[in-house]
Image (cartoon, rainbow, N blue to C red; front, side, top):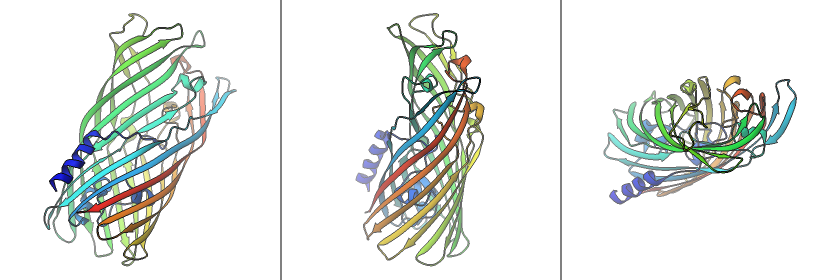
Length: 416
């Protein structure tokens, strides 16, 4: 047990996944089985990834289990830009910048009533990239948020009906933003800017399950909001040459959320999960960056402010799992994620509307090992958002369309 725990602890501490979050900041792809069931996987039996999907369900793990998961995401999309008169001035597409969402999990049953689990997985992350010579680049030509949460968890099974869990969350974010600075008077690019920094912050989570009988169960998971005070380095590369540096500081609050799930077993082979997630995206009301100590005084502004005003939203998912035998199973899922980005708060960092995800998967398991694979296709939808020429955008409005994300995932679990 000690060697396994040490190995996971080191992996959790060093893990820094490169994540392509074309679906927005929220990442739900924490295991192949979870991908296959559209994220509706709160009540799985003997699955160490329950640490991520529903900590109260780690009481369904027997003995000692470790799991790793790798999910590949590849975003694609197109856009059009318009001037103040509504005339189209540019059409283009994103630079495909695929990445990985990586998850590592460990669960140990202490006794008949108590369990310990720990996971390292991304809850919030994104990446987007556009041509550096495009007009879209005046808003953002490269944006990346790397994120990982490490969640030590304690769970208790009170009786055959009730189980609950509570855990801490150590959350890491690494933020990088690049854009061309477009002078609104001269109407030309005068240089490129880069903001890069990282932060650690603490949060917590709690969960509870209640089984009505052998076939029906409900569960609730709450995850707290997490506020990051981000210290970063700001660099500007003027078109005339040279480099200007400054210290940057900003505050980003990752939202709190509620998961509500229902599990129904039709028989010993087939079960259905329903899941609804409420995310309080209104915490993302602005992305304001303060600049200080510039290397060339009087050139840079003291603040770079951007209003967001996202609205709270729901994600709904349904997942089906069928066991053909003791070793083979198939899964399928569908998820619908509401759009939370308003017209006056959109940008090329996260140019996505509502999302529909279709997925399938398969699993093989024996007494010691489990291998699962999944494929998914996410229809990201359209999004219209306002440009801000007075702040340096080279357009007055934008339309993102024909956006989608390809998803492929594999998981491996071993019992000890």
